[in-house]
Length: 613
Image (cartoon, rainbow, N blue to C red; front, side, top):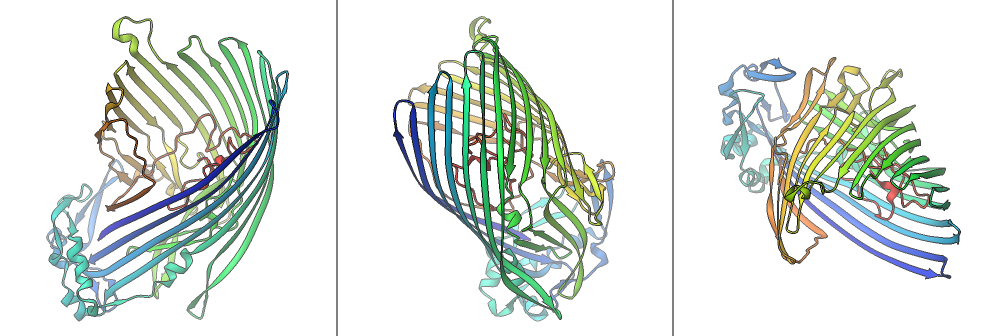
């Protein structure tokens, strides 16, 4: 099978900001912006199979291509019954030519007004209102061509006629060749012989993928504070009213016939989010900070857009569907930290935190069977749900010395930075049979994160060696059985970077990423003894860049890629918040819990920091 992808991204934004000073102590700010973004991706997939029944376009079992396997530390090694037959490209018959188009359009209109009053004697007040209107349209186009019958398939020819010169090897199947296609020659088989092909009905894929959503967020905030040389206090609240209206096609099957009816539904919610923050200056070099906040994180558009994506590889049907009944997650957050600045270029911090999370959003994967085209196939169904309860606690620490000024010679130009975070989370998952179980982890939140870097800087040269280690994290859970949960394994990465300034206007930069070449491994099983996925990352040398005092910024990109597989990357905890949250500023500038990342989801307005991931 040969996939290829074409991506086109465009973005346009028109902001406007006005400031009015009522007097020296009182100020008004007004902001209006209109942002429009498009994301159009195109993919072509061409596939040849063994054992094809060209009249039904289905495969049949053939003993030559059966296999046995062994396990080594959870990794399978596959041994074909007839390796010679499996490596013979003439045994692979034409199956399909598929053309996909994925289209997202996002329009965000934003208004904000802020009032600030410096009362005097350390007192101040802030108040403001915001209005955000978001319009999202998601659609998919899909055309599939298949040989119209066995005679046409024979005339089209087998895979040996369109082979590429390069053949790869498979680590998991010793001796088995990974045959690749010459893309243009394979595509020409269709373009030059369309009379030998027929199209299939793809409405069951394109209709469920469509949704249109309109979201309105109205918010108001008030904040006040007081400070002197010993203490700083601030508190306030943010009222948030959200209304979302979603339209999509819903499939209704009667007497074996499925009709897709366009339906609209609406949902709304209100939150009053308080926040209290205090800083105590123990002496000129030591501080203690404490915070209590409530934050909210809205679902991704794709999560409650109710769109359904279906893929079929010939053996398994994979279904990813939205959930229009999702609630936003919200949490009560408690933070306490100590900071010490023994010297102007040195900092040491230690922090404790706890989050009491409600309606945590997670993706449940269920395994079963589904009927398609009159046959039963294994099915994997993924759907976002709300957990009945969740929480997280942890410790974080940081040490940084900007320069070793006490050392002689060039050694004084070295510096050191180290930080570590330890996390312990959980949530309650509802299984397929309705029972509850506790999962000891939150999705993509590792058990620990370490970052250490040694850097050097003088008048002309800057260099850095950085090491990052991320602990095991939950990748996905199963609603069928606990042993089917998937865990992304612990991983480390070493990076090097250096730059040299020849003149004020001329410098050169070079970078090597993942020097050790460590990849990504996802495991499952009763003792996590089975490898589910393994993605070699490899090391990469970033092409040295020469800068001559001219900065070029591209707002439009057009690129192609083939067989691009990106491994899941765990999210490091953003400082100073946890679990995708930041300490909120009641104005919304500081942010609420962010939306979870999903592919092909449009970006929101950059002014709305409460979308912080």
